[in-house]
Picture 1 (cartoon, helix red, strand yellow):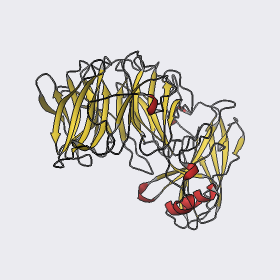
Picture 2: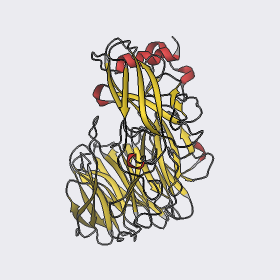
Picture 3: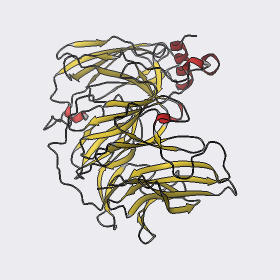
Picture 4: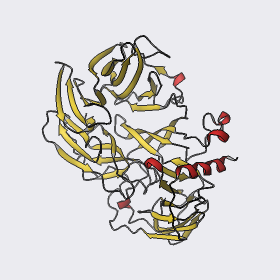
Length: 496
């Protein structure tokens, strides 16, 4: 079987079909709000008032993750900053948070724009007063599209599945999507009216997707699936988007944003099945993979991306610094940029027995090759295979100290003898190479962490398990004191 045919087999397995009919879908995606100021591409005209250094941002509720709130580290001033809008397809949720160094903006990842972006999850920046939201990846926000010149675009699609299915399509520059119910083997012409023109020669991509079984968010991507919009004219996306001939992937997502020391750049990770919007790259293991017996695998590649936050262009997807091809044993879990001008990054890669921590310069051409990077020795958890001390040592979160002298890391630790489990917070000094254990909880969960600017306190998620409601606590290193800050909360971010 050919590779594209195998992808079609994957479609048949993952799609949930239902009956339907129709042959043309149109939308009038007129946006009523006009573009103002920087058009959502820059923070230069936003409120630059910083928050106080003892301000902690967090997400609530800890499981639904619908709202961003601010609170002072002593528990005063708990107030809402922003909440996710509704989404017709999914129940959107906010991911992790990161303060711009000057305290004027809060970066976060969210999927509230799912179905109206070429990514399934994007990166946003919110002003400190909550009044100005801009989209960092795939900008601008939909409300800023009104004053662009408009054209039309059409997409051809066919459902080659043996049953019906619900589909949606999105075209970059459109302020809405199109949904339709397709019968088996049915052709569709999808027309987008009022598509904003991002400029002559700019490729504006189309995406077609659906919700698969268990809520899986599936997308069809293709490097040829774009159009150069022409004001006042109708252009065609020449490449068809049908189930038989295109790649079926989990929709591209983003996570773990961190700012540069001057706030001009932001680093993040993009997770994708293929490198959709760049030259095609080989996928690790394809040469020996048994397609005939196992079908099309779920590949996930991790791209390290960086964007200049002050000079965003429409459809910005950042500059790729490195690409971790699927390996299942060395996928990066966290990539955090240093808060100082040394431009170093901490990279945590997944391993079945013990996660590994590496240090690199951000401009290192080998940033995506762990075997060539400096590995951080914590004094434990650096083994392969079993140990008489533990059989699991997994990193939950990692955060730089504000002066970049070291970092804090939260970890899951399972002791081999006696099968005792602990969640712990460690502090590592990069100069002395010394690691100190700050806090250890047996049979309790410690999740994401946030360090105070003076490195004397740490805010952290605490609960029975990661799947149960969490609270945010503060640990004072000076007096070994624990205080609950706020209930039913997650993803703490301490302003600097």
